[in-house]
Length: 410
Image 1 (tube, rainbow, N blue to C red):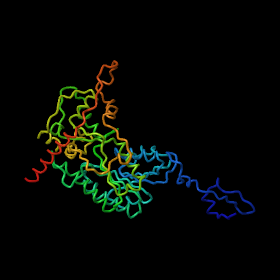
Image 2 (cartoon, rainbow, N blue to C red; image 1 turned 120 degrees about the vertical axis):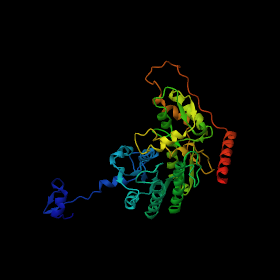
Image 3 (spheres, rainbow, N blue to C red; image 1 turned 90 degrees about the horizontal axis):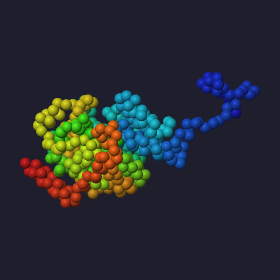
Image 4 (tube, rainbow, N blue to C red; image 1 turned 90 degrees about the vertical axis):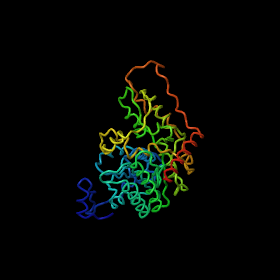
């Protein structure tokens, strides 16, 4: 038995006042129902896995896939957001009731970052921006912001930190078309160094260009050719015949992250997220347009007039035709994907998906005249694009090395 004061009764409310016995209230001790939320279950979306994960950049392409996979595993998720909260509310259904928490933050405010990660044992940083804005430069996002997140993780005792860099991050990236295009890869390189300096046990992923649902690779060529049923040429650097790409499926990258978090030996490692095959961009674009059943006359180089137009078009404009194809992304669009021999997703036990198998599905809703009731076998099936052979890869990389040495000698 225990006695209750008038103040305690008032706080409980009339419906919760216990029955009086001899002037003394009987109070039955019960565990708080909230304790059930932190008990570990057998795994799955409706149980708690024992992990609290903070995901910075959760509303992006790879962030949404991470949230869904973490929610499926029963993790409690903290989603820092900026701007309107409704822009992130759709992520709430990825996990069970009460397992997703939203928290406003500012990348320049360390206190808000600390509040977002102080109760987490795992932090994943997938914040991405490939062009500067009015409030954030590339250095603010990829270097200073990444350093602050890593430092606060170390100070708050976070066990696992996952940082996303870029496959071709370099202190001196090759300038192919515009000087603006090199700033992003530079920022990614120095941001990775900053993270490893502040948190040496961080797991770093260096993804190549990623594809999947609502990506910026497959969609780019759809929007460029949108409504173009007449003769139209696609602008590619050297017609895409000297650009080697190894696109990786976004869900495969997420599988690699989840696998790495479950392996203690993965801490402090760098993983290259590459696709299973190498393709010339020229062949990939031809395959994409065949899947869309849209005419593709050929390819052409970037002209000075075209680049001048892009300089006067702000990529931050949501109605800009050049938003997916701007000065800051031209270089990384045409830089060759070159593996360096570091561990890959296959070392984490991930079965990789080839881009032809997925591109047919992604482009199915973008087919020209898709409302037309076609006859069986009326349209030819699209075969897989040819892969780049080892000799072709060696030739292109040798030419790239010679061009780079020539520029340095000048």
